[in-house]
Image (cartoon, rainbow, N blue to C red; front, side, top):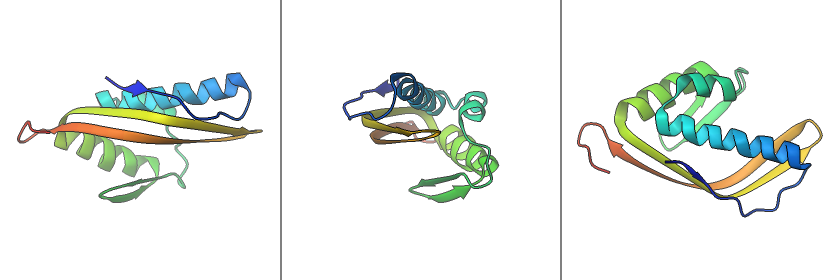
Length: 114
């Protein structure tokens, strides 16, 4: 089950920081369950959005949804657990960003091995 541990210094008002923590929690749940509906609700649909991961990078929501979530998370792994820790959230007016460390454990669908 996804775990979120926050230890960083958060900058911004509590409501905005809390909202970003909520999005990070939803993201870990989307990974854990390969929940494409949730992913669509929390992920930017801007053509400029990107995702960088060990297999390369994807650009645009459709590519991220298909290649990272459907093919990789849903296709290659039978179980996924994303643990987020050392979260720091920065809020500056209408802009916000987060920094965190993560540990990703999974089981391969073909071999059922970690």
